[in-house]
Amino acid sequence: MDNPETNSVQGPKQPRVREYVNYIVGGLIAWGLIGWGLDLLLDTRWIVFLGALLGATAGMFLARHHLRHRRRGFSPDDEIDQ
Image (tube, rainbow, N blue to C red; front, side, top):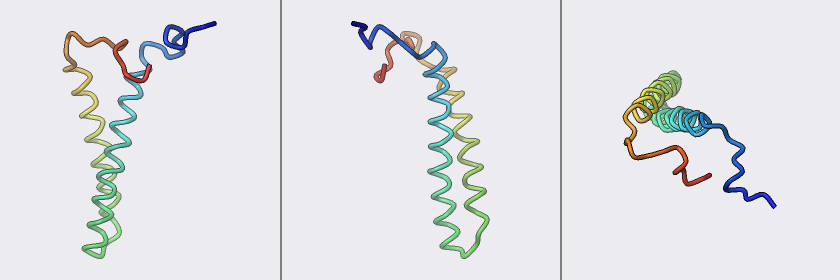
């Protein structure tokens, strides 16, 4: 039988792409909710879109920063979910 730990379906770039998507979606959700709350508080309709845009942009920059400044002893094979 094949061992699922040794038979990896994901390529070497898959964890990095997943990390990018996680940061961007997390930023969208977090800042979108903040914008939605400010919309309710200030009785407007446009701040939620500005918050989502800000969150996606911040998530992209944060993902790039973390991927560039990763610790040198860390390898992508050390991922928990693999």
